[in-house]
Amino acid sequence: MKFAELLSIVNNRPVFTSALLRAGDLDTTDLASQLSRWVASGKLLQLRRGVYALAGQYRSRPPHHFEIANLLERPSYVSLESALSYHGVIPEAVFVTTSVTTARAGEFETPLGRFGYRHVMPALFWGYVTVTIGGAEVLVARPEKALLDLIYLRPGSDKPAFLEELRLDTGRLDQSVLDDMARRSRKPKLMRVSEHVARSREADGGWEQL
Image (cartoon, rainbow, N blue to C red; front, side):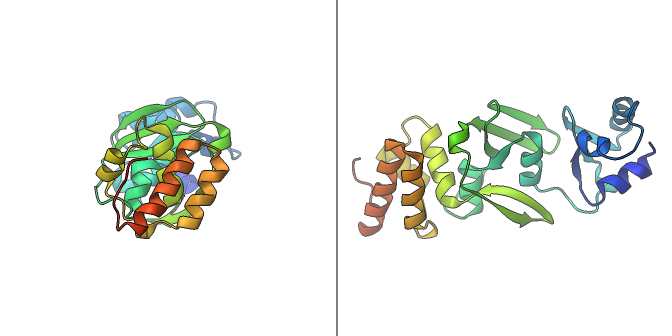
């Protein structure tokens, strides 16, 4: 395969998997060696085994970090602090793109950023939507599910001190959706927090003892 053929196959995708190249009728016998040569020559960046990014001069658009996150680990969706920041629920910028996955938890340090993954059981792998960001369709948790994922995965996160530190903009959360999702989870911890968010609205954002 010539590099021009690769560019034609990936089209406008700045990040792609080697599985995409194996899906056609091309002779892929020497594909791994060819990809290694393109990485060595600076035409590609290897983000992890089987996941590559085009070097800057060959991209039709810059890759969004959510797009990269979805590809680095499958299945996964962006959640936790990254999704909360994206939806404007928390004010802080996030420097590690955080996702949840049914695969193993882990973290990837890549030339295009850091990406962290937390494991959830398949029964909790829901509550995400497809959004278009920077020309790519990506899977991102709804703000309510991002909050519940964070509370579920972080020890002590249902305590008032932690909730105060988040500085949640509860106006960006749909209380009925939050309640429904908490009940669907069947996790008492999440149902308590959902009820507490509702009470905090009535108390102008004050977090009372759970």
